[in-house]
Structure formats: C-alpha cells, structure tokens
Amino acid sequence: MRIDISGRCDSGAPTIVLAAGLGGLGSFWLPQMSALQQRYRVATYDQRGTGSNPDSLPEGYSLRDMAAELAQALSDAGIARFDLLGHALGGLIGLQLALDYPDRLNRLVVVNGWLTLDAHTRRCFRVRQDLLLNVGIEAYVRAQPLFLYPADWLAASQARIEAEESLQCAHFQGMENLLRRLHALMSADFHSRATAIVQPVLAICARDDLLVPWTCSQQLCRALPNASLRQMDWGGHAMSVTDSATFNALLLAWLDAAPVTTARHASRVA
Image: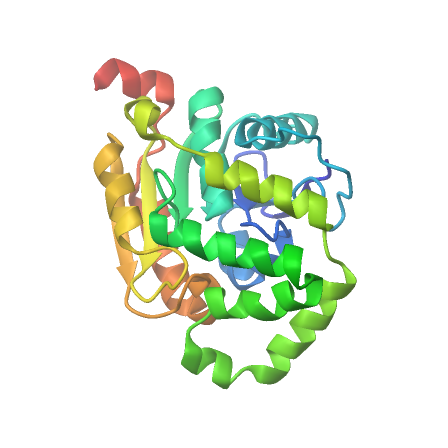
C-alpha cells in the first residue's frame, strides 16, 4: 500500500498519519495539509481498495486488517513511530492501532468517532446500504452529502457537490469493497478493551453531526484512560472540511500541548 509523505523532511520532525473515513481517500485531508506540513512530516494514504490502492477486499475483511495494512505500509516507508488523525472509520483504525501496535502510536485524534456503533448511526448506514443495493451507485453517491454536511453549507456549495459526485461515481471503490469495509466499521466495538488504550487521545465532534451523535465522542472519552473532548457547534460530520479554520485551530492547539507518551511508559505510570 502506497504512503505519500509531505511536509517537514528533517530527521527530527514528528510524523502524523492522516486516515480518512469510509471514502478512504487521503485527499479528504486537503484542508488540513498546509497547517500540518509546517510542523510535521505528514503521511497520507488511500485505504486498500480505494483511489491509488485498488484491490479486491477479501471476505471477512476487518478493522484489524486495516490497522495491520497501515502499520506495514508505514514500516515500509521507514516510519516507526507516529501520531494519527482519523475521521470516523479512520479514527477506529487508530484505536485498533493503539491496541495492536501500542509502542508505535504516540497520540491519537479521533474525529466524530465512537466506542461502539450508536443505534442512530446504524440506521443511517443501513439506509445508505439499502440505497446502494436496491437503487444503485449514483443514488448512494447523491445521498452521501446529506449525511456529511450541514444543510446551509450544502445549499451554498451545489457546484462543488455536483463536481464531487461526478468524480466519486467515476472512481467508485466498488460495491463489494464498500460493503465489506462498511461491515468492518459496523462490527467494531471497543467497549471491552477501552482501558487498554492508554495513549493520549483527543476526540473532536460536531454537535450538528447528522450521522454520528456528538454524545458518541463523549462516551468514547469517558471510557478511555487518557482522553479529552473538543466540540464544534457547527460543521456536520465533515466539519474538518466545512469549518477547517476552527477545526485546525483545535487540532493544532491539542497537538502542541499534549505530551508524547508511549503506551509502555503510560502503562508504568498509570
């Protein structure tokens, strides 16, 4: 799996890995790149089966597989230790990395994530799955912005949304791939192992997120030993896109302040 590296290139530069959500594309993080590149070596990637990493995903594909693939790709790129910024599914991949590769992940930022799938979010994903299976790819893609963006932002951004829809239809990851990645996402449950995730974690959420209630981030923070919560009043599920200025300020302030503590060290001092 290909990893793209940008930003600072000096040997002492810390690395931050950016993991997108169900769409899987590294380009999701374009609104954050210039802010992060000034301080970090930034690693972006298209998840397996999407974008520049085309593949057919196997049956039973899991969150653990996603974490292992990313860990291996980072090793191949010479990156041993890193922070991770993950949106929704990308945040869950980060939580899995914290469990499976604790000595490699320094800190984790989970954007509009969850401990276990909320009933409302499950309903939203089932609706999207029904659209994909019973109506088709174009209907799925057309409905997607409704779950991602606030209505007022959508109303003012129709030209952009239409361009994105055309691009997504032309480069769709494939129905089978999407369904297998969606199943892995919906099956994830960190309740029983949350206390083992001892790295510093920041949960960022938007109160107007239609897809994932902000209370899911609150529950996640309560379950983790070393987590903090930041809330945005507006921006929807993809608030890193719709209000990137506010999002970037919250992100950078936490990264500047949070200690880089290894999981091994944290387990000794907890």
